[in-house]
Image 1: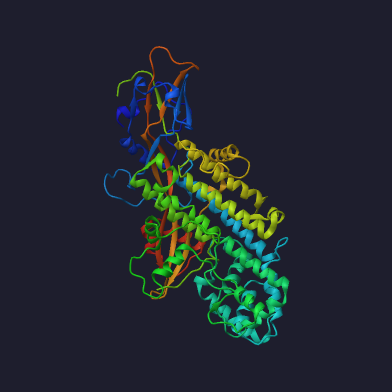
Image 2 (image 1 turned 90 degrees about the horizontal axis):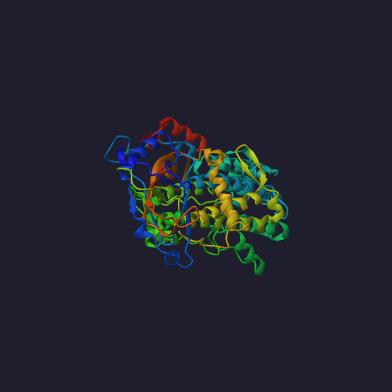
Length: 630
């Protein structure tokens, strides 16, 4: 390393981070990153002006303590530049290359800097556990929510004497897959067994993935509800029988509507029709059922599935088409709008939180950030990675369509001093999404019901109630937003947001989380997964989003526009005699980024199967090349 890169100022700021720890790969990259270091020097005489002249109205202030000196900075006009290098093997000067993959985030980075990836993994573990807890509560019933199992059992018993029909067969098939207490009529037994066998032979529809593999109970709910997503002809036999049975029992009708509303608000509005329109029509005049399809519990729509159906409703999908890239293109062009509507569910709110990763220049914090092309590419990879993880959480409910120098004078070093990746709007929207889903659950189960629910994990429920944990997740992401805005020179974008305990309390909650990253068990979890997006009829293969693991990159943060110096104090007073030199310097952090791929596969792999495959083949190239091999 060149001598000027080893020079140490005589007066270093004591409250700033330098280079965060990283694995061996990160250390080697950090050494090479020093060739990019830029130094910003300015003599105190040129920068120092009376505080009253330099402070902007409502400016955001920062104090840097360096030994006996205190530098007060107005950062309201500060602009930070963020960049990451292209992936290269250590020792190579040119050309991109494949970097090592890590199965967990903890293996890819250190713990001194909070990346958006760390928060994403924390959110993923919580979201899976939340959804699993809701699935169990919705199935069994809790407080005022009577439960889907009771609904299906009651409905099945009400129509068990009806003549055999497609609708009745699917209802009993769902009950059988769910392990419900329903006596199967002899006249239906063979037909139901045939339907269950045909369903289970279609892995895209029937194979539990994600957190649904945690327990037999969750797997049964997955298969039960997927069966009940089956298409039914509105004018087909048995439909009138189902409508009449639901209409005749007010408690059952209320339970059915509540189950549909919960599914729509927890994920998204349905992509297909349910029985509510037929039930409403039956109340008025009992007309003959119209043509079209209907479903007991339909799948939900999503931006990605809406797009693939719009582009290729019945035409072959061209070679090389990438749905995630097409989404990025349309989000940037403004033709794919992610903002939730009044009808949107939690999934839309979660995806909306990812928009700042695709169009960071349109976010409020953009005036204080200069993002290099390398970092913009990094954000796109983060978008695809988090979208994949989010879709996996909702996979049972989401639709899967089938379309076609020498020592200077005394000096003070000023670093950007970021402790969190500055994606303020992303964090704020994620906090708002947790507020939204808390409202959904309180409406369905009540505050007392939510207090009795507990987030699930593969090892069982956690000790803290889901209601308390939801408040903490809102505090975590709102606190990350508060800290990020302050560090880049903004005030909080939503001063009244957060957990309800106040801005400072949420900021402290996030800072406590950030200080204990290495101790958080969620960050050591393996989130590698394969998630189906659509089934290509022409190719007879399923297009999936695959989350292959994590890789590490150095993130360089420098001053594009330096903050203004308001005053420098020495032992609490203005210094007399020789003035210290203020140097604005660059810092390097190591961040993990998700490695994802969009590929066709012949077989859907669950989490355990896919992770075993990744561990066997290790590199991105080999993992993808062997996906369709036995």
